[in-house]
Length: 380
Image 1 (cartoon, rainbow, N blue to C red):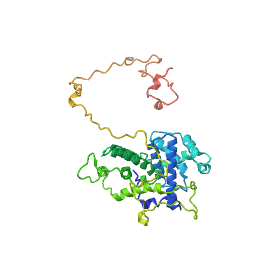
Image 2 (image 1 turned 90 degrees about the vertical axis):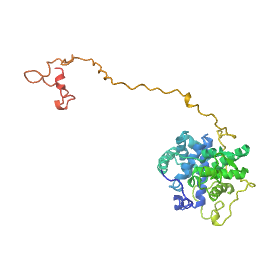
Image 3 (image 1 turned 60 degrees about the vertical axis):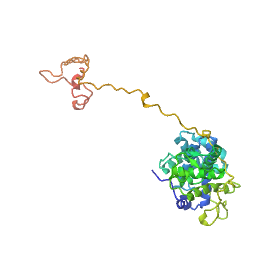
Image 4 (image 1 turned 120 degrees about the vertical axis):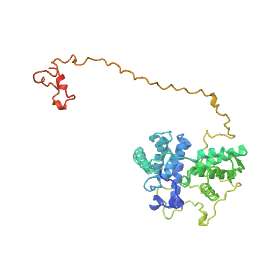
């Protein structure tokens, strides 16, 4: 299976960067493409798994191709189209393009060309080859709910924390976290962030042992606080960026155009937004609402034990056959031996004296006929 996780150095040496696109603009294009997939999926009533799968395809695609070669909105439609088939929520290509036409202005929709459907269908083959047909994608949603069921504490605060963490997972699709870390680690980090902001402190959890210093040690090992803080800051950076007055152009910005300013890494000497419960972030992006099937706390514990083994009826098997002779073969009805079918009108094929009867077959020599003695069974 291909490896889909990259370090930050590799994320800065993408094909788009090689082609001359600066890093900030590429991240902005990634965020716009992901947001476009989310908005389109919401308008088409697609599930969060389908939308998230399309976004992951989108991020993986541009680790091998550049934004200059493949327009991001065409790629986004193609990723959502493929994700719908993979997650068993298929939508017609023309319906996705129809929604895209309502969401995009005219100058951006021109990237679809004269035949938008043909553009998307052609790009689907390139997308499948790019992601190496690795179609199954796991997301942090399932791990978020799995881990939350094991936490103990105030149920109201726990529910609030889960809803906030779910929102952070939605917004994390606009970053490259899915290219950096496994979904289990992202789920833990965003639950940690949500716990800080909602003032929910985990004091105890189901399955706790002496070797578990923190609650997430039971699910993922060797996760440091620096790693969690880095993931949290990448999500918080989404809310600290000022909203653009208008959408950026399809092509990279000119040399005199300034890109939106966003906080940089601490390694560059700039301070980062501190995770503080007193100052929760104000999201500037539209959010996906949590799905209706998110379980509500308190969770019901399964207490019904399986029935005892004595309640199951024993399974009886037929006794093996004793040494009995095999049954006689059935009688095959048909003419007795040495009796020709009624359609044969000539003497027996092997006369005692003289040559065999003349050949009245299908024009083939006897060696190529369907049966070696077919020549003797042809009517004269």
